[in-house]
Image (cartoon, rainbow, N blue to C red; front, side, top):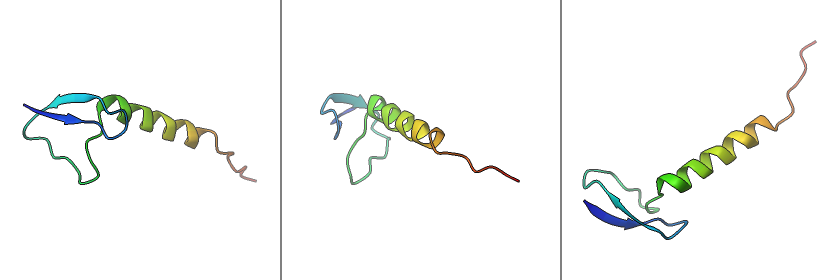
Length: 52
């Protein structure tokens, strides 16, 4: 097990030694979920075009 710090919330997380980490840094599961929920809600708020 390795210990990595999240680049967004700065919390320390224990992760697998086999997990690939991007050069931009480790993003924890909590911050990943927040980002995905924000993207999903942004996609749902777009006005939909009416088909005639």
